[in-house]
Length: 326
Length: 240
Ligand SMILES: Nc1ncnc2c1ncn2[C@@H]1O[C@H](COP(=O)(O)OP(=O)(O)O)[C@@H](O)[C@H]1O
Ligand SMILES: [Mg+2]
Image (cartoon, rainbow over the protein chains, first blue to last red):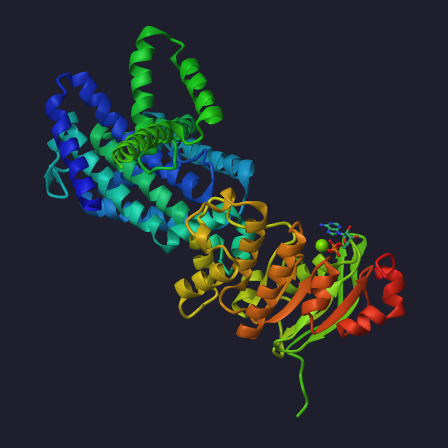
């Protein structure tokens, strides 16, 4: 049943590019999907640990730089460079998580912001190795993981690739968070003191979620670096972290697909409202405030609420019919 | 054979900054005993539980369990040795469902069959019909019992209960006391019960310790404590 649902969504992703006529729309969708994965990384940290990161652009950008350097300076193949980058990112983020996830609330946000900006400024200053403000062009080989590299450049096929990556990621995360590990992290987020008193070590699970969230955002960074063939300090800027966070809040984190929806929503507002008015940011801000105040579970939460209500109405109708009959 | 007390606290001192909340408390409890701990508000009962369970590190003194010094251990390490507690201010997992959290607590406490253990405790505490409820949606009395359930699972060796009956009606608390007594006996749990309801404490405790201003005032069987003139004067005054 569960797998059927994923197959259905897979079909949707494969069919969608066939139905989209406009090239602009297609490239908008592909871009939102990559950012959606980025936002998902931010989202799982919020969902499982209640931690708000203002520095995830670091993971998004670093992975692009790392893959570029591993290929250029160590002459690794694309696949090994990507795998090595994500493994290293997981380890570094885990160690970092052991330290930063001890810090509560606002202070955690500020710390991640500081770390993020440090990374941004370092990349900006490093003219020799990282190309400074100009960034780096990445020379991808003709195929990556056995796929023709042109598939990664074309918005339509890249959409399908990103869609598959996203589905697999959501599937794995969903399984993980439904397991005991999910219970443990929920308990810690909910009431850390009580968690300790029922015998839970609270730091380790948080660090694991932090590492996971970094890897998911890093994976998005890799996709972005392949898609654009380019990496620059811009991707490390705090405003990029902020954008991912806004997408996450827009979409809501109760459901794993919330941040995905949030990212798509964000790009559509930016594109279509941005065309009408220069104040699209202000309008988006108003939407974010509305959501924070009235719909803490975001757009995804609202949708699910609507659906539940519809289902309940349907059930009520059935019950009433049965009552009439009997 | 010399009988070594299963659980003992020696010369315990706990300070909050300049305030000495526990001032040289000595306490020994035998395995399977239910010990009442009473005393007026501010006597230091909650602080005592905090120091024993690792929520606060004492200024001086020793806490021993089964011959092992656990004074400096972290909360989780103590829980692994069977030290478990409930809270005066209800402490549960509001966003989780009832069974899930009790199951998790039981699993962490290394119960042999956590599922069965969790269900048994929920049944005993009359919470089984709320198994799939979000804990935050429960009523006050049910949340109190859930707090207790989280402490009871996995057969702890020492269970420290901080006013588990607070806020319950008289019937509810008498009823809960009977459940508690049965569970403790069944599972051979050593219990330290802090409670304001004297009838409950005297009714189910084997022995009672009276605390006043951080110091032990008296200790004895419920009858002895009831008859103790010092206690009557200092604490039971109005009731006696
Ligand atoms: N967190 C705290 N900080 C400072 N003083 C405290 C704190 N908790 C308790 N106290 C003080 O310690 C004493 C004992 O309090 P407590 O252990 O809560 O007593 P009881 O549980 O017997 O009512 C009181 O004088 C109280 O004011
Ligand atoms: Mg108290």
